[in-house]
Length: 389
Image (tube, rainbow, N blue to C red; front, side):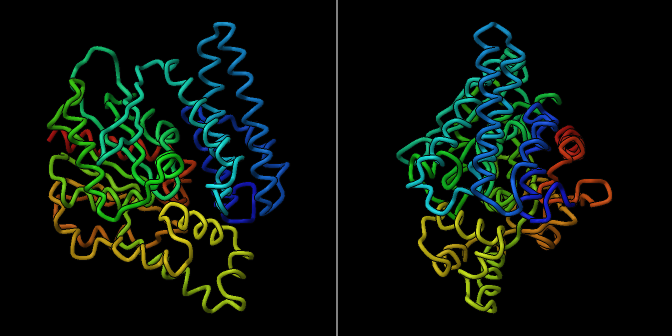
């Protein structure tokens, strides 16, 4: 679904940023005027223009906060957080040495942290014990009653951030009576940037401590824990659910059967390109970003190492260990994992359902960007039914 750009990656990321308008994370006019100043495929302009918009909107939020306008401050700071995240998206050549990337990431975190106390429902920052350190998270609550409620444990994927999790899922969950514990695992958000933690294939080792932590909270109904992962999280959550059986349901948003196959296919494509991987990366924005982001989040230096690191990321021989009811989501035009949700669904032996989102209903892009209301309606209606049953 083309949105503002011919470049497939720019189109998708612009749609992603704009789609969060559903929950106050963007305003369409701001997206349009920002994107019209960014030429096709110009990553430097992308970062500069989104950063300028973010700073302008942040100033609105800061001024509103100083003047005591709580709602206006919250709305502006949420938008600024999303725009700072978007500004940083393509800065992956060497994030560890990129001061502007670090500044943008921190600004996205801080503007969200300052918006969180202004939400209509309570939100608390968390540090979740993990190995010899902690993972960052947020506890989003329906209210301050302390009532135990169904609780979604939610994490992103290959590139999403903790702050994005509110817009991608938590806002819709709260409206329906679900509490949410959102968190960044190793390789995600601030964990890779600030703690040097990289993706592990055994994601159950990440989720089990989060479940342990969740069960200490009085607001969590221990019998109604839901695990949900977004994008690559559709593999990560599936892997965790195969070994962590205290979750009552699992949602794979969207389903991923074999991440290694995607990385290996990219390497194979480069092998058939004159000039190899460097030439392919120079020609293709999406390939360039996938490789650069992978090197950073997996902690490897080259494509061959990335291919090897991705080898364990498959549900082959594991999918049948999932025992809880599982919802697999699928996007008709998924540019990353096309066909993989069905393959994973076929391997599941638990109670299961596959929901496909189509192009002709405006929901066919990866993770249904631009169709947040439809995604939440179908997902939470399924959860309501399964948990009631």
